[in-house]
Length: 339
Image (cartoon, rainbow, N blue to C red; front, side, top):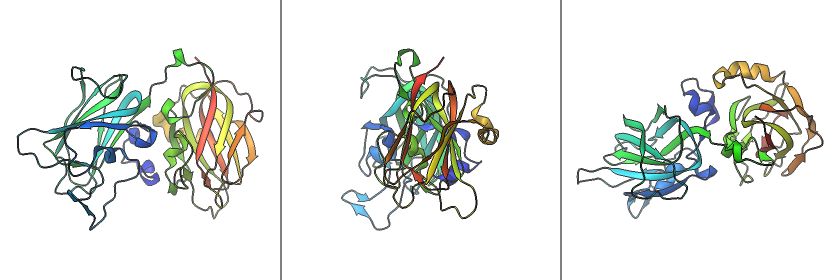
């Protein structure tokens, strides 16, 4: 999802604020497929937008960026199993057929299950969470999901065959607070942290700010354009769980000539605030209390802050401010969950 899409009101709110549980970058995995003749299943889970390379062919034909099966002649259909990056509640899908024109899958249906291992057994019960839906050529198809249970695996059916460029499964990862002890990263995407709004995200992949591990390159993180007017850039984030933040880590990995000069963090306990009130939330965030006063940053480095944090008690949302602009690879906010 690009920064332009995240601001586009024509895109459902679940696709703008949900965590993509089918993200390979977060740990989602392709487990099995009936057929992967033209293009492997794992391409369908890649984070970057699907691309089309004219004139690129492999041993099986035209190279396609997604999952593509051969043409069926037996009256059946193809399907695949995907393990999500984390167990979680699913709120919507984006079944993307970008660049698949005469070879897209005409319809899709999705089932789900909860299973601790990688590949569920043959007798594993599955629950339909998305009934048959038509698909078109080279387009995003957004479907709301009304299931309120937590799932770990999906079984994706395409009818009868064809290609899907990307599958995005937006939701909220499940955080087992009852069994969570000690400090955890309250803002990690795998713990349910979600980006709700930002001033700018011209470069890179902003949603990777909350991803596990360190950035692999300068495109793996949140970077704003060069600011040519007064002010500063910011990003508003919902924590995965209400908690008390004890340590902050701001990582500028790979950002050398374009890291922010300084950064600060504001926070608030917004339990009564819904995600649907994003505009009001952004306005309110300007007046949140200071969790981390302005701190100097440096190039390509991890900056850890503990003693510098102000004791605010439990919070649900944070606002990271960078002065005046630049790139941040990862943000970690370690703390303990609160009731």
